[in-house]
Image 1 (cartoon, helix red, strand yellow):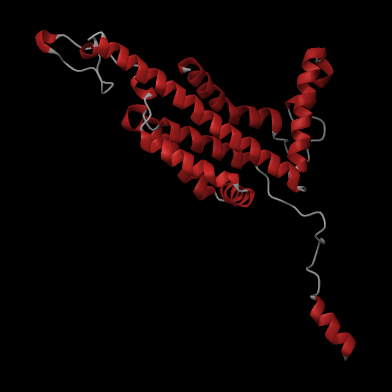
Image 2 (cartoon, helix red, strand yellow):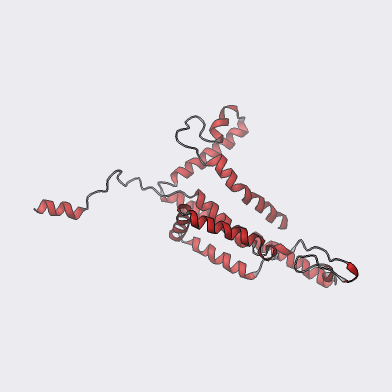
Length: 234
């Protein structure tokens, strides 16, 4: 689980770059090469074409999210499952660290390890082992905070409001980014789960488009019905 958590960290780090170069289309004025998939399509093999098709499906799904409620609900459901998966992986990783501490305590080797995660000086100028497992031991308070944040996404209305608010506000996005950076190093990494959850929510908000109702008329706003009724009565 510790290796899986490290892999998860690398995957989360690569998400914004994959989104920017592979999924997000460029300006409409660029008709020939709107993104990487369309530029490399003529030179692709069968396997690469399947990857290109997957990318086109993602782009089509992104366009559907602008006009339909069902794709937006499906996206928030995937986000909810992903948040629960991250917390599950972190919980198992913390369990393995706790089991390692118990084993070392039974073998009376716990004094060789720096519990705080730092190298501390010992008598006769000896130093204790650096505790690389320490950041994986998440605090219980972090589990409560992250699970409380995840509960908000069980409601589509709340999830839609949160993602849209972050998507349309640069100040909120910058504030969330500062919190992510702060808690990535705070308490020697024991709050990193909170940073991971906020990072996923922020990336989902960047991908989450504004809803455009196809039934809404373009141009000027329609005249209210009560005014038309008054004119007919006159």
